[in-house]
Amino acid sequence: MLEFLFSIRWLDILRFIVEVFIISFFFYKIWLFIRGTRAVHVMKALVLLIVAAFLANVFKLHTLTLIVRYLMPVSVIAFIILFQPELRRGLARLGENPLFGSPWKEEVIEEMVKSANFLSRKKVGALIALERDIGLRNYAETGVEMDSRVSSELLNSIFMPNTPLHDGAVIIQGDRIAAAGAILPLAEAADSVKTIGTRHLAAMGLTEETDAVVVVVSEETGAISAGIGGKLTRDLDGATLQKFLLKVYSSRQKKRTSIRRRDIKGEVKVANEKAVIQ
Image (cartoon, rainbow, N blue to C red; front, side):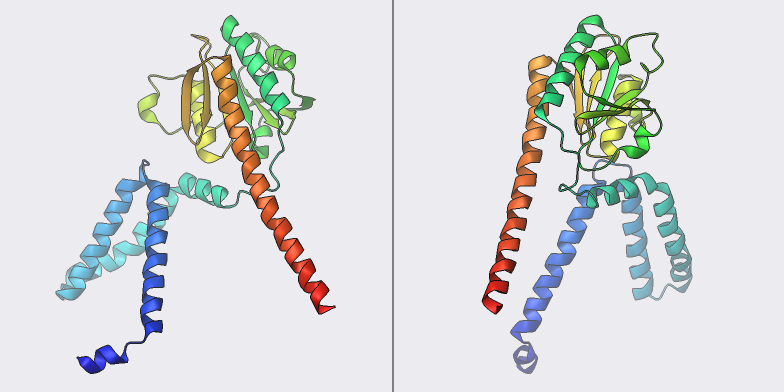
């Protein structure tokens, strides 16, 4: 026993701690990703299957081991097929690049708020998506291409009833209206179908799959809602909507600034090293 203890090196202990930390962090991230989704129940079933395989192997239950051995590959393939939207969403979040997203401005927020207030008073339905780091080009291609400067007057005219584009969504990239009449994915929130309309479901669906900010005006009540990260903040007025959008805008600017500062420090460090070498 003492020989075994003395044979353990500090490097082995450090490696073990690092491995435990990495594995724990990995499973923690997976849990955060699937928490609150239907994938939780399937993940529980997979865990039970793994436990069953372990117990069958320990107690030499050959029949059960054979069954589990054939079920494992099928369950993994079924998991990938069933949760393809969630996996695509996760990969898109991993691939988002804050350096090259569309640089929208405060003027765009002001024009959106003015339009939302006007449409709310008139009880005209509207759906506006503001692109951030994950591109919305594939959704913009489902609508009519515009490439126009963002203005409240143009937004109001697009959503007026009996116009060709009033039923779809407007997609804003940077300070330009990229498309109107676009079709957005509906959220998979079956419990919410009875309480919210199609525009709100489309807003939730887009923000579940991307990091876009979406503004919705209800056609029935004129209520203004704003969504991000798969959640809607409802019953906003012009002032609270502007605060909401400015908060998102300022957090995005801080993120870009911190990344840019790190890049500048790295460039200066490289330049200093080159100067020393020369």
